[in-house]
View 1 (spheres, rainbow, N blue to C red):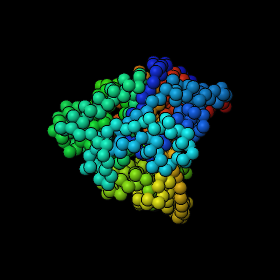
View 2: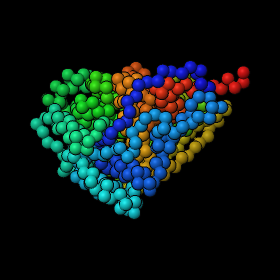
View 3: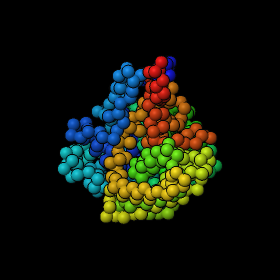
View 4: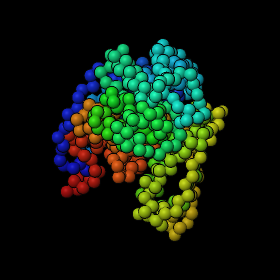
Length: 445
């Protein structure tokens, strides 16, 4: 059902000119994302999995019959206006990196080689203390972390000028950093800048990138579970610079299944006594996660999902004693083709037990690539929208993340169906359309 009342449309600047997509990490996810966009632009592929390119949005009552494509409803950047660049610790071009990742077929890559070969990564900010199991030669050096941040800012300005971009967006697609808790250096811009100058060990590379981008007024998305833009200093900078932020951790394989299945259990009031999840994968992400510190960061992101959806404090008899375990195992022969096994112990009427087994043989980067595309396009939209750009955290984009960011004091919404409704209602709201509640009683008056 519609609310029966339209909002005043929000002022949204047109998506004129080129949009630069700056990506931290030029590995499997990035090259699959970039190659996929070029394949779509060439007409040799379809953007399957991308809500911005293939999704529709219902407007008004069901009897109105209005369901335009989202890309026709809100002024998103056109794919032909996207320009790509980024940083990596390895100097390989996007073509070489894609060939090494072995996600995409050689025949497809050869068709895209001229485009991908022209994308070469800038030297990266890297700290072995945060990513222990890989290393590379293409890294920045400087007298302190403030110097490194200034180098990244210079990279951003140079990229924008050299590629004649009117706007930029940054997205983290690099490896998972070691587990970290917020500290005093993350509390304010002043504290953070003093920490940069003093080489504070609590400032991670992802935070240096986020600081540099936000200081340049560039929106930032965090596709990994790192402590990055979800700290007070970045939220302060985001609001001050009108540069939206969102994150964290792309919701792709096993957690995607949890946010689909768990809402179903809760809707039917089926009990849950245990959920055991294990993964095998052999890409660079799997190698990094073999380090206990990096795995701890990922584990925290994955474990947060069930409690938020099932709300055991409200349903203690159904969800008050869940045994939830997550394992990730590095297994090189599997490459990017991750396999996630789930054993789910549920119970029903009178407490009688049942089991569900899920074996998801997924392609991690294939699932992540359309998310990256949607995220950068929606972040750019938010940066051009007077209603959204000044609020900092873009909670309406929770649909794409394992650990969605929220305003301080709010618990995140993990139910993927509620997330989708929230996202589409936000788009309706900024365009002055009626919000949809699906009540439907007006048809029976």
